[in-house]
Amino acid sequence: MPGTPMRGALRASGLRTYWLRNYPCLAEPGARAAAEDHVLGTLRTLPLPYRAGYAVALRALPVAYRLRTGRSLRRASPDQARRGMAALTALPGFTEVVRSSTALALLGALDRRTGGSGRKAA
Image (cartoon, rainbow, N blue to C red; front, side, top):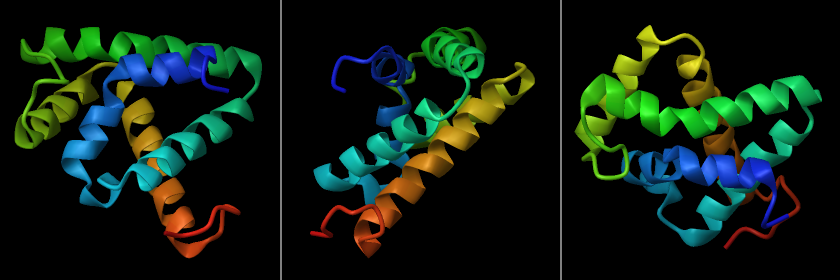
């Protein structure tokens, strides 16, 4: 599934960088991979119109972030990124995308650590 449109949208969003800088539990590559897999696996279960909308929101997130903050999410410090993400709450839909994706990512990393996803914990 390396080349799926949703994976590309997630990578384009900048959320992976945001998660890495703000959640130390995702510093280990296996945890990051499990987090991304969990997000993408969950999104695959959505009906096509919801998946398409989610993909559009993910791809638009860096632009919305820059419009709200004047800076790039990928280059923001952890504190700047948190403040910038908070500023996105004024834009419809972005709060839900950021919060749900982040929760899914953290659950994926946690699931990996506890062995619940079928992957072996490191």
